Image 1 (spheres, rainbow, N blue to C red):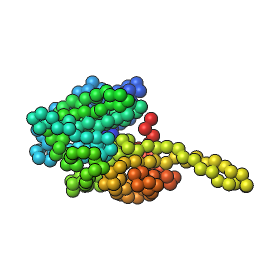
Image 2 (image 1 turned 180 degrees about the vertical axis):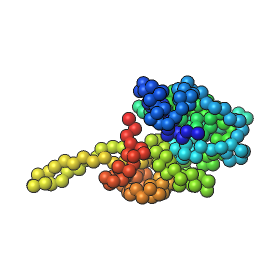
Image 3 (image 1 turned 90 degrees about the horizontal axis):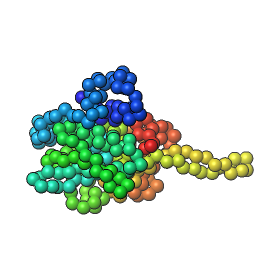
Image 4 (image 1 turned 120 degrees about the horizontal axis):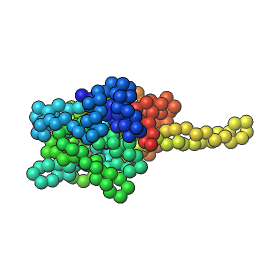
Length: 249
């Protein structure tokens, strides 16, 4: 099975007009798989095949990414017959990130279609399944910052294995890469310096601690300019995040 990041790269290349042959050679993906992704087809697995309460398989790397997206801009809502809707809210300014979110949802639950529901200024990536509740035990009433958010042991193991994808989900939802500036006096004259940095903002102390923990796994230094905002600004740290996150646009 191809991981979610490969799928996202392939979708981006196809949207840019690159041929399937060129994409396949560059990413090591078969033309058949590329055609399925292009045409929106998925390989069906039993809809009840839950990785937690059944015998289903979990794409762990895609799940790490999806978990970060869920903790940032995702929610579950209960519908009839114990079916849950997973919704990831994505800013319309970043269509590439919408594609990535849809690819992550589809990789974690490939037996059902992934819907894109347009709203004012954003698109909700939506999938229906009785077992989303099994994969996101953090679900509960009210906003996330008003309840405890703690990862189960199996979730911690996945994040520890794929901290880059988990952080990509967090920063792509509630973070950004921006340019800051400061002035220094050089030879008696003020001189302006610009430098990039990453900011992650979240009102949940628990989610903020999870972001800090994942950064610590990669030995990426961070600081807290505010209780609800985390900053990564050292040159080598920004370069590390650039290698697997980068600007949204």
